[in-house]
Amino acid sequence: MSGVFFKENFWSTDLTSTQGYDTLLQHMNDGRKNCKEFEDFLKERAAIEEKYGKDLVNLCKKKPCGQSEINTLKRALDVFKQQVDNIGQCHIQLAQTLREEAKKMEEFRERQKGERKKIEAAMDNIHKHRQLQYKKTVDSKKMYEQRCREKDEAEMNVSRCNKNTMNQKQQDKFYAKLAHSKVTAEDADKTYQQSICHLDKVREEWQKEHITACMFFEKQEWDRINYYRNAVWTHVNQLSQQCVTTDVMCEEVRKALEGCNIEKDIEHFTDIYKTGDKPPAPIPYENFYNNPRNATPVIRRGPLQTPSTVPDDPAYASVGNFNIYQ
Image 1 (tube, helix red, strand yellow):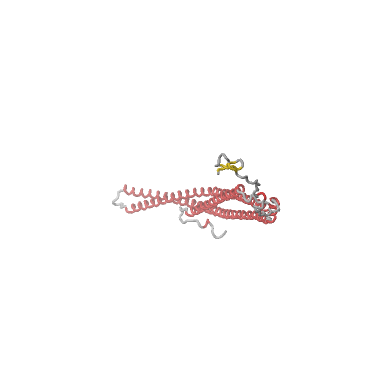
Image 2: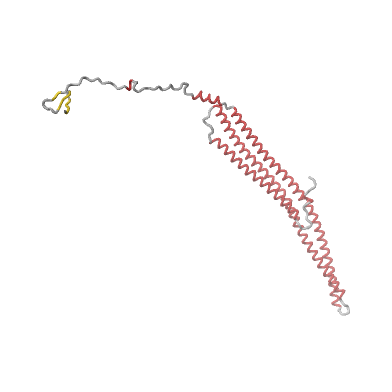
């Protein structure tokens, strides 16, 4: 990599500013969040793949598919159901693989987080030390300036004093105050210079830590992007392999269907379940009256007897043993 580096582009002219570091830290946290999002995506995809795979397996177990078919078509359908079951098992296996990839992403993310804690702790300490020393330096500068003003004021008072109109006691007081102001101004000057010197050392230390942090963050970002890219690449390769595996299994079904012989299946069914090779004869027309079984039998009778009148009762006549009204 050439041209652009974190250590050259995340500074601020304000000594107390942490803008560059905060920008880098926010970007690193966003990167960790993005890794977590992909990790969650893999887990969700794994759950979908597992459910789909189990549904396919259960479909093959519970749902019949041409169970009454015979011969070559039955064998092809058996291959079809077996391959659908295999496809379901492959999706279940893919779900497990995706969970393992999600676990790897989680471990990578947590490892970077743990490594980054050391740098963040060091930077937090140096920032606090820098802020504290800067405040001391500002305070010492204010004190130095105040003591210089007091010394200047004392010198002006001494120069304005009139020895002819001012007694010795008053003159001694002004001179004593001037002497004291000079001492305090010199002490304040030394303190201020020491604070500046110490602050500069803290600044140099902070700059070294900042450069170290920038280089560390840059390396982590390089590793993260590379790992993230490779993880997505691996994921789509796994999906492609799943498609290839599914196509291989579908090819097995196609081969089985190519072995399905319609003529043989029909012959096989006929040989097993045939019920006879002769059709029923035509049913003839039968005339009802020409059928002897349907003819009415003829009853032969003797000659009729001559009726005779009963002498005792002229109202009756008799035929044989029967009496009939006349």
